[in-house]
Image 1 (tube, rainbow, N blue to C red):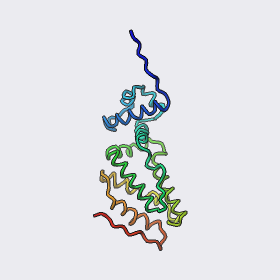
Image 2 (cartoon, one colour; image 1 turned 180 degrees about the vertical axis):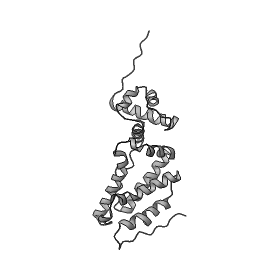
Image 3 (cartoon, rainbow, N blue to C red; image 1 turned 90 degrees about the horizontal axis):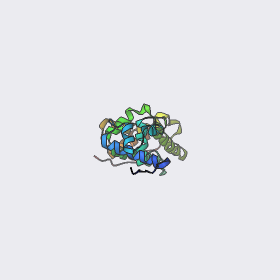
Image 4 (cartoon, helix red, strand yellow; image 1 turned 30 degrees about the vertical axis):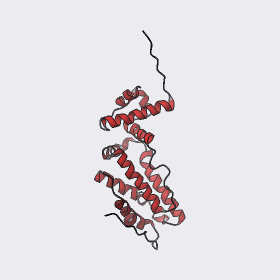
Length: 199
């Protein structure tokens, strides 16, 4: 009998192989049918190896998404304008929704209780950084920046994406910003820049 030897994968190499296998399995069977066993088989490893790194499939899938694309909350936009910064962050959300699709996004949100606190807090942290910079520049009233108001643009956009289950247009983004968010946080003598909206 001729023995066959395989190179033992460790550390980052093994992690990358598992995450790539998780994404391939997700594309092949969808989130509803994805299992840790299926990912382990595709990665040619044991499921106990997966459970040592991720507590459940939703944490694994989120890691696979971030392996494929960076988190949209990483490095919040810093253009020098609160309106441009928030708009850029919202556009990232729309792009990520297009990449993942409505079914996967809805499933991830439905199972968000199984995720650690870092995942839902990432967008909140990004918005906090953006509005804090704006307050330092004098663009917005710091007293108006309650936690609920701070995350209002991204919360409303998330609702739009999930309710309609397809990407929203630029007119919706500017409406959330110019008609709802900015009037709440800007100084009363500031006006919202005039924007020609798509019809």
